[in-house]
Length: 96
Image 1 (cartoon, rainbow, N blue to C red):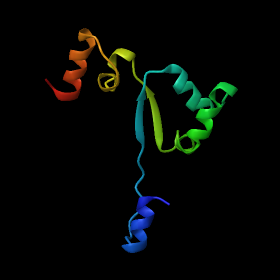
Image 2 (cartoon, helix red, strand yellow):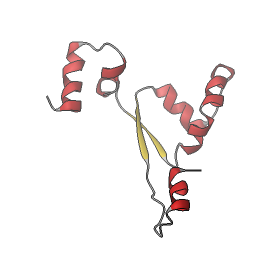
Image 3 (cartoon, one colour):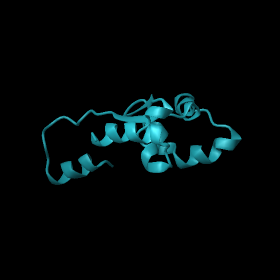
């Protein structure tokens, strides 16, 4: 049950359910290919079990988009980034 359905039980609203899409920006081509073909190998079986719920929403509510590795803003938070990448990414995120 979604949060909107729970709220509707307490406060009945006579409006349409929101239709939205969440965009995920990924720089790993193998990851993108795995989400599009829904085919798992024995080496990716653990992923199939863990992310089954997530995979059911890919294409309907979640859109996976490719972003070049040097433009991946999330890298600034997840790993050490060299200066020539750090400063442009910081400008994209914070404006300074």
